[in-house]
Each structure stands twice: as structure tokens, then as C-alpha cells.
Image 1: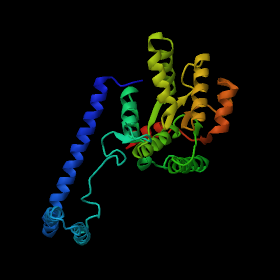
Image 2: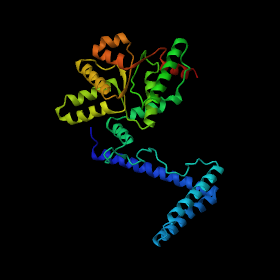
Image 3: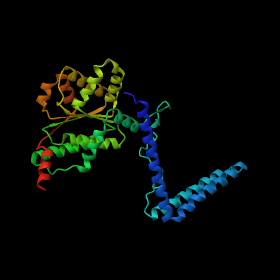
Length: 328
């Protein structure tokens, strides 16, 4: 799917706001340093003076002026660093601030052929607009590694959850190096979607593109585009995003109405992403026998051979929280 003009303009305005915000942050940091370290400003002023003087000398034919300027700048930078260190400021405190260091908050980077192409962060903004990804933003605000708790698990359930958390961390740490997939399965409310959210947040912060769909939402979207001949272009764009994003999360597989269309589309998605070496996470309340019975042998084979299977057990955490809230 392609952005329309209004959606594109919305993203560009977001980048403008981001650059303004970071520019103001840098200005406030600069004023803070000037207030605490008056000598720092004097050193910065001397850089301007020396640069103008060196330019004049070069025009007058003094070829050594460039070398003298270079040596002077090194000494000044060293003194500035000493001043920052003396006041416990980080060495990069006055460096330009960028939310995305790849594109420097412009949304575009230089491609292999030298042409400008969309940055990963731009692609994620596109995904968020096109596929109403606000639900994942709400989810990861609540469900992330910083809010993770083991208090509702005991015994074997606790062992399973600890192993799942370790697997999730390894998935994040090795994401850019290794092609890997995760399949979380188990009873309702045992932390499967929670761990998917933990991973999503970490990878989004790394600049990866993440698409999240509930299983029913995914196949409803595919059906809407597939059965309307006017939506052929939209279907092509949607599938390209679905197959090409860095991480695809399919939550609650098995809650959709399963039929031949769903089975064929699920296989196509799993197979194409595997061919492209793009990682996926699937969560389900189905056990492995139910998975095999509900979907085709091809799908069962793809999942069991290409995914790390992670079983979670225990009580429904959501119900446990409600009970605790009711007694407090």
C-alpha cells in the first residue's frame, strides 16, 4: 500500500517537529554549559576568530595557515573536553541530538546506488499509518521488559516463563545477525502476547520495522483486499509490507475463522517470509496437536521446523491481577 499525499505530509511534519524538539534540547544544553562553564563559550568564540583569520591568510597565499588552524582546533577541542569532564558533563553533551542517527531525523538515507531512500524509521511510520498500528504502541507501553514480573508464576510454570524470557532476550540480542522465529503457545493469559510486546518494543527502539496483527485482523484485511478487484494494487502493497517488514507478529493464531482461504494465506505468508529470511513471532492458545489438526501439514511442518517452540503454562495472569486489585 502507498501513502496518500496527506499521510506523506503528516509523516514529514512529524520529522519537522522532531528536529525542532531536538534542536531546542541542544540549545538548552548549550545554555546550561555556558552558565556553568563561562570559559567554554570563550573557547567556542575563539574557534570562529581563528577560522576567519586562517581563511584570510590562505587567500593571501599562506599555505601553512590550514595546518596551524587544524593544530589550534585540536588544542581547543581538548580544552573543551576537559571543561566538560570537570563539570561531569558527558563528552557528547553538545553534539547534535538525533532520535534516529541513521537518517538524522530526515526520514531518508543514501542507498547503495547513491539515491535517497526511505529510512527504517520512515518505513515504521508508514506501517503505523497504513495499518493502524496504534494498538501496538499502547501494548508496548504496558507490556515490555521493564514491567516484566515473575510474581504470578510458581514451580514448573515459573521455569517455563524464565526460559521464555531468556529466549526473548536472545531473540532481540541476535536479531540483526541471525534469522530466527518464535512460536509461543500455551493456555490463555500466560504471557505469550506480553513477551511479543517486549520484543517489539526493543526492536522498534533499534529502528526495525514491526507489523503487529491479531490473527483475525490479519486475515480479515487479506480477505478485504483479495476479494475486491478494485484493491489489487493495495493487496500487492500490503503483501509486500507483510512479507518484507523486519518482524511480523501474529497474535492469537486460532481465534480467526479457519477455512481454505485462511490456510492458504497463512502458508503463503510463512513460506514467503522464510524465503526472504524475515523473522516472525506467532502466539496461540492451541497446543501442538490442535495446531496440526486445524491447519495443513505444510503449515505444521513450516512452524515446527523453522520456529523455536516455547510453551508457557500457568494461571491466567489477567484474572490474577484483577483478583489482587479487588482485594487491595
